[in-house]
Figure 1 (cartoon, rainbow, N blue to C red):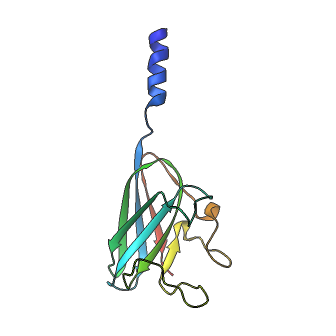
Figure 2 (cartoon, helix red, strand yellow; figure 1 turned 45 degrees about the horizontal axis):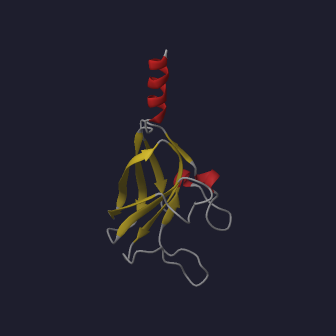
Length: 135
């Protein structure tokens, strides 16, 4: 009986399985710059403090980014085409993005970014592929 309890305690202490998230970005307008993604794991950190980020060279049409070893769970992501490769999302004088962007679930906000809940996706232990269209 004690061995069973110890075995169960060890099993509970093992880390959860890491999953891979593949993000398929459609609508990349040119080969200039990079496509960048930031991944968030809560409404409190959404668009402020990503848990992971990735980038890939732009390719007209579709670009795939793979983020490995994420714990299974809920996430949302923001992606943009940094066409001039300056490392930031460019905005006009009114604060409106001048570079193409998108969010998980192709979520849209009414006057700005969507809510985390609208962009939230579930990443199972087996991994997942999410597709987003740039706008």
